[in-house]
Length: 113
Length: 108
Image 1 (cartoon, rainbow over the protein chains, first blue to last red):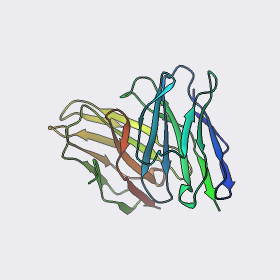
Image 2 (image 1 turned 180 degrees about the horizontal axis):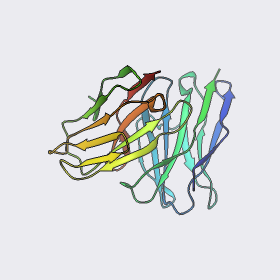
Image 3 (image 1 turned 90 degrees about the vertical axis):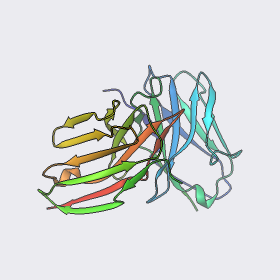
């Protein structure tokens, strides 16, 4: 069964450092998303990406965040200068057109120290 | 104000009991989805409901979409320990938006 894969599963970084979270969406999907979930809190939308550009972003997704699809398979989330409050699980998801099932990866646990 | 209000926030029951969790909104939706999330995992889709009043069954889980398409419920019959998890309702606008979820714990 096709699945969304994320690497690494856990990343520990020092405050102020840059991190790149990687995702391989399902191959025939066209819509890609990043969500985050702070421990014990809700799953929050960060950004959606379609046709090689951001289609929507939340207020969380400020100038410190960027996304890229560097090749035909990877979808990355970069946090330029991490803050303590960026510590969370980050989930990548992909779907066919919105409204269909969104398939989520297993997440990257980011810990900023 | 949350787009989707889920209740209860937390539910702890014994194996074999029945339960219902709710997802409410003041907005009307063309469809609504229920996901289940286990610790350390991403959400997994359980069902999509589309038509007002629609009822869908998935084994012991029964999902209902309100007549006005503003709310939904999930009923679990004879809960099992494997049902333990976070149950999330979600709707699509330009993006998938989740409620805060109901944490269900089923004790043996």
